[in-house]
Image (cartoon, rainbow, N blue to C red):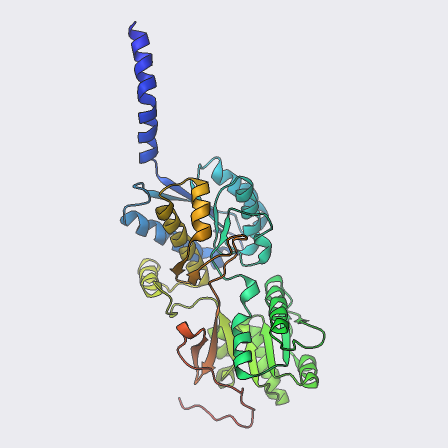
Length: 397
């Protein structure tokens, strides 16, 4: 009889015990982040920002009354392992919530694993459109997609009244995707992206003379190039040697401080592109930068901003949903609009693609990197046309 009573009591108390266990168990947030291998240095800020967020959210009482615990797996900079690692996070590590890995290549595998399992994944740094495959319903992008990297320069071209463009891309997947979408956007807006479409150049190219000859022959008003800081420097060196000056010179890498270091005063009035800077006047960015520097003794870069923005969006979605139920989270994230350190979080509810965040244009003016687009972040008005080489004056130090 005593054994029967004990069994009945256990059955009665089991649900309450399980509920208590759930209430005390931490909310596990899983992510695979490169901590070794060739991407480790680039991804360091991403990991540091997630750890900073964990400290902040726990100091504020956690999520749903429970402490947050990060489970960060090292993917060893091997994107091919991402799908398997996210399956481990969902299974072995019992992750309640998922934040995507660093980089587009790894994000594709993570997105596939999460969507197949009907688990929400915050895509923090997968900017290529291939991450957002048709049919994915549980993957939500935070950073600006490569498809919109040409939005700002096309806006300035249109305002300046220029029509004939010469569009180039460094021979890498990201740059080609940016340039291809920029060319398509130019055509839609009635501009001429030039005969032959996007001109792809080798990463090691140091002499742009053949491409300058093509741009001159086409009568291009604007030179629009997607690539790195060293590419921008080599372009300017070639332009100076050939005394070539289009009305607008946009070279993505010109926003990098290394560009100014490479060409000095010849950097004047070149326009570059940046998805994030510590001085951007986005909501909450000043506080984020202060906290990040206090914790890690260095300012945050783009990877850190992406990781932090993703975590904050996930946090807000959980609070709004009031639950870790994946369907409720999916519905909440699809309808959510909010501000992040990267800009506005606003999605295409069908694809999960980011619509709100846009990289900013920076123009070198009197040796300083000034934001000239969009207006809400601007620190100066853009100056055009790009000056001819005989018209330039030496800047006073």
